[in-house]
Length: 550
Image (cartoon, rainbow, N blue to C red):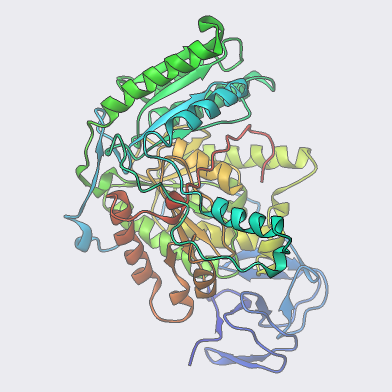
């Protein structure tokens, strides 16, 4: 019979409902029992014992909230009866010994990637076209319209055809409710025309709203992020459009590129509109330079590389009450496997580490990393409070509806993505990963801002867990979407790649799921599997302006 409840940690005083529990359900866990006095929706929590106002709620073995009113044993835990609370006293860490997982099945495995002159290896091969400032966004759009389809990177117009059928019916006097249109096969993928440059996965156009206005630090940070993309192993080269007078000066970008890649030798073409003059001349030069760069980019081919050349970004979005017990710990095991193999992983989303900071401090190899982590977290939290917000306001309505009712509950489950390996470095946005192992990167919890940042710091694959469903992707790095529950996997099969609801259903262990995910990552990194976000052209790119974004 399917398990109905789960006690995550022996010290917990709440249980997780794995299925909907009616009033009067007798729950047995270990040698104890409790009878539900409220309906307990799946993914929500039930009180093991009675709580009085001020009593601590413990989950994942840590403080996640405090009771605000009397909660009977067997009662549902909700926003009506508890409030966010988390351990806030941080002390100097005591580094914990790490038990590496068995990686013998992967020890001799490789992936086929694009080798760069600096020793990095890409899981894809893209050309970038980037504006230094939002004033150049229109020129970026003109180049996009001019290049994509002729080069074989155009998208099928599936929904345009369906819309036309509906419009034709309306023109004929029909109503849209009565229209029965023919189903059109295929997806919103590249047109089935041959690519001019078969070894180039695509041209990506990164429009944004920054580069001028705001404060100078915003421009400098943006240049750092853009440099992260230009020097990224998944990128063969770039065309950069500058207006000329913006805060984000080309000289800043060039300095940031040198900081990340001192011997940078990729094709890089920088065009300044105020120097060139006419728009037509600007576009023509950009077309010529970009095509010249594509000719060079097309010379690259996939070659075997060790798994140590993988850098995986760990991300979650649209999380639910199962995230912390299925998908997140599963990719946490994947993370541990990759670290043991000499690879790198990135844990970001600092607002979603609230209440588990001490665990991460204890895992820092160097004291200065622990100190930097504490400083970044405290500074971020203080800025949020000064703006009238706080980390406790991080859970979204969707999170709360599906069982993540406090930030500490959400954070304790989110941190499971990082497995158990030591922290080898703590980075501030948008610094680059340089050390193999687990890296902490300061970003917001916002899905796209954080994914954008992880890729800018070097992630050549992103593992993205979701319990509610989201199409989030990235222009240059494959984002593998992992469902926490089977219902979501079946409902949104067009945008989800992997199902870990099998853990909830007792069909496989966390370790088995994590191993399966690593095998999948190797195929994605080798170009053998095209993930849903890439297939749909989900090129989400949002720089973080370092304001308060949770």
